[in-house]
Amino acid sequence: MVDSLLYGLLDLRMAAPLLAAAVALYILVEQLSYHRKKGSLPGPPLVVPFIGSATHMIRDPTGFWEMQAARARKSGVGFTADFLAGKFTIFIRDSELSNRVFANVRPDAFFVIGHPFGKKLFGDHNLIYLFGDDHKDLRRRMATNFTPRALSTYAAIQQRVIVSHLRRWLDRSAANGGKAEPIRVPCRDMNLETSQTVFAGPYLTEEARERFKSDYNLFNVGLLAFPVDLPGLAFRRARQAVARLVRMLRDCARESKARMRAGGEPECLVDYWMQETVREIDEAKAAGLPPPAHISDDEEIGGFLFDFLFAAQDASTSSLCWAVSALDSHPDVLARVRAEVASLWSPDSGEPITADKIAEMKYTKAVAREVVRHRPPATLMPHIALQDFQLTESYTIPKGTLVLPSMYESSFQGFHDPDAFDPERFFSEARREDVVYKRNFLAFGAGPHQCVGQRYALNHLVIFMALFVSLVDFRRERTERCDVPVYMPTIVPRDGCVVYLKQRCANLPSF
Image 1: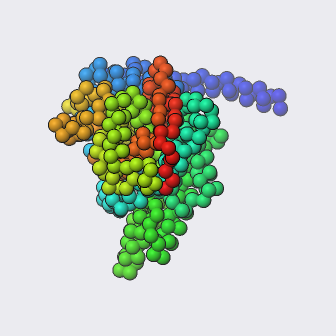
Image 2: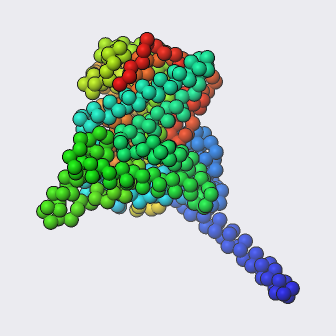
């Protein structure tokens, strides 16, 4: 036994130099590959083996992406190279180059992944992974979710949930003596309830909603974690949470199909979608045709519903916080929003704001658009290059590259005085910057994968601002660098948007 142990140790000693040589060779090949792909682009001259700049990105995402933007701006080429967790990466600051990527999502160019490790995290059933006719057909079918009638249904739900949460915020503020508190987490909780109720309506029980909240929090943590898929780590827990959420939404779709087939009236997004879906499925069956792709499988629908939830939840939390901060720091804008809303609706009416009245809030909508331009919630949209792609005359993106067009950086190009918060750029008929600089407004993406729910997202922001400024007096507690963006995973003010709150009207409405 002693002899065998000695022989084993001897074998390990002999193997150690070979292992070290193999690792050294791998690191050398990795460095050479990085430099071959990078060419003359700005970027780090050497990369940390295996992980590259991933540690910096996770530890300080704000500083990391500011550094990438500064490199791209200083170089004059509009984009930079880096290496993230085994992936050669291109960060694109230039708006026109970002538009080129967005416009070329197809099998021989780019593939949207939504997150550097999105396929692992989100699962297989995801709208952003579709191409061509499959993608067009599914988007066409989803259009029924965002008709004026559907948006009117959602607006009533949104107002009911928002007012109930504003009441809690005010009660909590009164109970703690009017002390200022951050609203990021309360906004997140409000948005989660809004999304659950708008998207799944009566099909989620209270118990299911609590499980949903817990799993969604696990998913959020995993989005920002190091992508190591091992038991007990945040990334694995996030993957498992997504699977449970998709199954929960699958069951909602199944119940909705049954209710719509029985002649029920739509009460939420999944009802509007399933009402058309069961009609298509039944017509295909009657004609002896195969069932329509992507809408017959409840599990697949559950995955698409999760897409909606993810797109709406964290982006809206970001926008609501930035809206409150912007209104506080621009009292002239706040006064105009209050005046416009007061001319169309009063809390004393006891009635929710109608869809027609929301449509008349032109200035408030311009403020919403400027909030989204000035602080785009999702700052990047990750793509993978499926083939070599000539981005400029002098540079071809190699196949397999992780490509990151920056919606955030595009918002500060082209526009007049882009660093200023100025809703007039979208409200003024003389300026019409939403038309003139349309290609720079990339907060909702561009091309075939532009956000299908952007009207809903802007409506939600308009409704929140209309209710918030009418029902609440507020003041931001400003500290040094409190409005520096941090990633949670969408960008929010560094302090979580700390505000003082006080009830503005005699009585809050009860819808």
